[in-house]
Length: 206
Image (cartoon, rainbow, N blue to C red; front, side, top):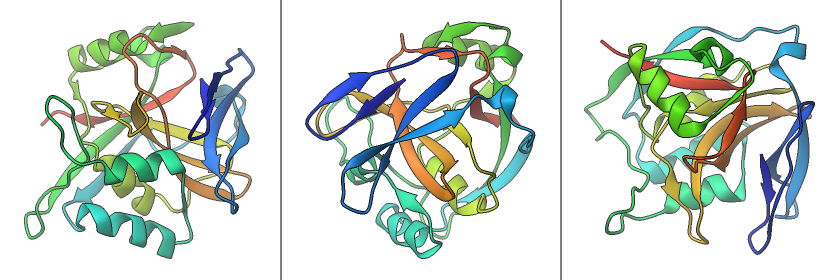
């Protein structure tokens, strides 16, 4: 996985820990070490229904902070990203047209990849099992709906990646590190490799 700041990126991954991005009070991207999912005593929800379309895209940032949660620099960046030609951007369901979506949480191993898999294979297998990719709005909406998240847990949003201002494809992550609840991001490149214990959120097909 990768840890980044706005001007420099480095990559670090091992079988024992994942370094994910987070923004400190001074605005710098700091390190948060997340224990592997199979070492946690806490087991998160398997399915969860959340509502989309309650807020405008720019209102999500205010709501998340008002709930005492943090937003990483990268997450803030892609939430602000405007539509460009052939590039996805962050959008939300139109207000007054809110919809309920049922989410399902799966590990890479539960999708059949015991050790690890590339992201495009993870997405393809999930879709073959009746799951669908989330809209980008699921990231901030889930952060607001999952305020009782336990420490040392990160859930990654299965979504079309958004290209950040400084380049690179990003997907949202909802995590709890050091007692702080975060809306963060990680690489969304199709060939990025994810270990079998990583947890992904998809939409259950109706």
